[in-house]
Structures are given as structure tokens and as C-alpha cells.
Image (cartoon, rainbow over all chains, first blue to last red; front, top):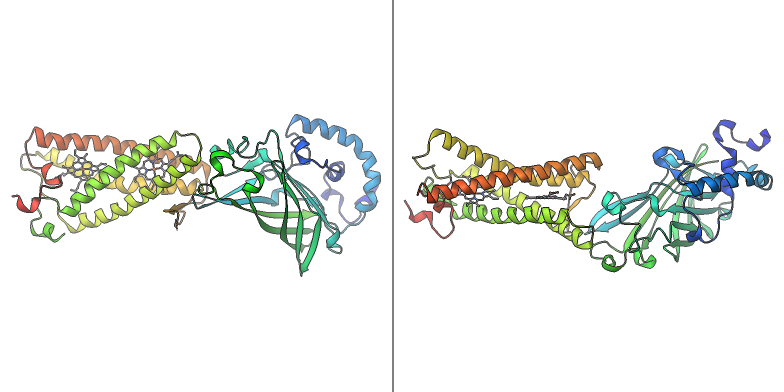
Length: 245
Length: 189
Ligand code: HEM
Ligand code: HEM
């Protein structure tokens, strides 16, 4: 069994079953997926938060049951020790910047889950799947946090997740890549691409990038909020992802 | 301003009167706006009012600087001779507290906005640097400071206005008249 951990010391793998759950294929419709289905990275709590809600706990249990099967099917891939697939939530951030009455504002996702396959030797074959629960969105003010879930903003009851899935990774030279794929928010899907800089430091790979979206493309902020004079249309998404093998 | 230097002890200059009454109206307006907007449910209207409140508040802060400059370069008229020692002392104290609040209130607003992480962009054009890093607890405390200072202002101004009216209607002295617009102090004794 120890050969499974080839390339990384045992203590750096806190929960191998968890990591297999991590790699389980996600359903394709993010809006139908229960909140908290992905392992959720919560920087506040310094790691994976297993009991975000009940549905997640139940799901985890059945997933653990499946894990034995998945173990076998995934193990050849696991033996490739150079992949950086495990998100370090405490050091990673997913931020968004916007303007409100021309005042620069910044918010973040307190929690997000990501499946990552990145082998520096074969970058184009990499894959990134990101899920961010709307419920974990922190606008920076309590008043606005109470508001973002409602129908005019994200309608989080119906669309609990923001979802991105990479389809192509193009090398831009050096350690820069262009990652493209569909981004789904509030039931609207738009193709986005973002430059990503990858820095490998020892056993960590750090991914940095930012790209712009327009909230109107996703019907985020409807009705009285549709006017861009108060909350601007342009939203800058910034990510800083620290990963280990 | 030169007129003030010529007859310093009888009247307030047009500059002083203009600043006094413009700022009094502005402060009363901002006070009402502050109370109104803070109770609103979050909406674009509320966000607009907050910005307008902050822009107007910064403007009043700048006027307070002008007013302080006026005060340091001019001598206000003497208090009437009938006032007793304690009354004179209270009048000076009251005016000093009012001057203090003219600075402390907008400063507390600016600090609060910094701590709440909502920068002040003057008229939506000129960003004013944040004095504090974002800190929720500090932001809430500064909100209370801003609010409390405002209620102190309301109290002191009420007393100030009542005393001014008393000077006019009870003491029949020139204290109110020499601050009123249209009555030129230059021509008065
Ligand atoms: C100079 C005159 C000012 C006056 C008379 C004034 C008065 C007030 C009053 C009465 C409130 C309501 C407090 C409450 O009940 O919650 C308020 C709230 C507020 N003021 Fe001011 N203010 C002034 C300047 C400023 C400045 C310069 C700023 C910022 C740059 C500012 C920022 C705010 C903010 C953000 C609130 C809302 C706090 C909240 O609801 O979270 N104010 N102000
Ligand atoms: C927000 C409202 C107000 C503020 C902040 C304010 C502030 C001040 C200050 C700081 C002074 C002293 C000027 C100096 O000698 O350097 C002053 C003088 C004066 N204020 Fe006000 N004031 C306000 C409203 C009023 C109102 C409503 C009245 C009248 C009903 C009034 C009547 C006067 C008079 C008559 C003087 C001249 C006192 C004297 O001759 O010694 N003020 N005010």
C-alpha cells in the first residue's frame, strides 16, 4: 500500500479517501448539485470542512463507500508524483473586485472547491474544475451579504454554485498559460479565458491570474440593481491557488 | 475679510456669517440625511445617498478648515458687558466644542468608512486615502463614535440656538443680530 504514496511522505496526505472523493467526477449541471457537494476549502477554518451541511455529510458517507472502487481505478494516475492536485485552502484566495459609486470594492469566496490536474511536463493536458458556493460569498459588508442570495442578485436557492470547467490550456510561453472554458453563474454560461502564471516552489505550485466578466452577462443584479451607475458592470475575478501534489 | 480687521469688536464679517449659516444648514441637512439613509434597506438609492452624504461631509470638513483659518486670523466681536463670568466662560466653551465637532464628526465618518472598507471617492472622482485598514469591529465602533458625536452636536447646537434667541428676545442685546445676514456690522456701532 505504501507505494501509493510514492513521491510524497505519508503525513502530507491527511486523508487519502478524501482525496479520492476529491477526484470523483462531478455532475455536469452545477445548478442541480447540492451545495457543499465538493470538498469545500474554507480558509477560515484552515482546511476542509466536512460538515458544512447535512446533505454534504450524507453524500460524503456514500462517497466514502465508493472510494474503495475509485481507489483501484485511479491509482495508476496517482503514481505520477509530479502532479499538483491538492488545493491548500488556507493559502488560496478567490477574490472579485468591482466598483460601487466608483469606489473600488473587493469581495471573496470564503469557501470553494477545485479539482485540479496539473503536470508541469504536460500542461496542455491539465484540467481545472472550480465550484464556488454562492452562500460563501463575502462582499465585505454584512448588509450586502444578506442580500446577494436573493433573486435579483444570485438566486442562490435555485443556483447555489458558480462553476467553471477548463476546456483548453494554451501555453503562452514561459510559465504563462491561457486557460479557457465555460463559466456558469445563475444558470447562464459564458466562455471565459484567463491568463494563468504558474510558479513552482519546491513541492508547491502556485497559480495566479485574473480576468474580467460582466455581471449583466449572468443576470447578476436585476431590477433596480440593473443600473451600472451604482454597481458597475465589470467585475474582475482574481485567483491565487496554492497547490501541493 | 479686511473689514473684520478694521472694526474687529462689533460684528462678524460677511465671510464669517456666510460660513456660519451655510455650514449650519449643511450640518442640519447632513444630520437628517444620515439618520434617514442609515435606516434604509439596501438599494441603489441607499448607496447613492451614502456617497452623497460622504461627499457633502468632506465638503463641510474643508469649509471647517477655512472657518478655522478665519477664526485664527480674526477676532470675533466682544461678548456684551452684561454677561457674567460663568456665562462668558460657557459661551467660549460652547463655541470651542462646536469648532471641535466641526472637525471630529467628518473625521470620524472618514475613519469609519476606511475601517468599513468603503473608500471615500470625492464626487466619484478623487479617491481620498483610507486612514485605517479594513477592520469590522473597529468600523462598528467608529460608527457609534460618529453617531454619538452627532447627538452631542445636536444637543450643543440646540443649546447654542436657544441661548442666541435668549440674547435677542430676553437680553435685547446685539449678539444674534451681529451674526444675521443682511445686517451689515460695518455700519453698526
Ligand atoms: C460633517 C458632517 C457630518 C454629519 C453631520 C454627519 C451625520 C451623520 C449622521 C447623523 C449619521 C447617522 C448615524 C446613525 O444613526 O447611524 C451618519 C451616518 C454616516 N456617516 Fe456621517 N456625517 C457627517 C460626515 C460624514 C463624513 C465626512 C463621512 C465619510 C467620509 C460620513 C460617513 C457616514 C456613514 C458611512 C454613515 C452611515 C453609517 C452606517 O449606517 O453604517 N459622514 N452621519
Ligand atoms: C449646526 C449648527 C451651528 C453650528 C455648528 C454653529 C457654530 C457656531 C460657532 C462655532 C460660533 C462661534 C463663532 C466664533 O465666534 O468664532 C457661532 C456663533 C454664533 N451662532 Fe452658531 N452655530 C450653529 C447654528 C446656529 C443657530 C441655529 C443660531 C441661531 C438661532 C446660531 C447663532 C449664532 C450666533 C448669534 C453666534 C454669534 C455669537 C457671538 O456673537 O458671540 N448658530 N456658531
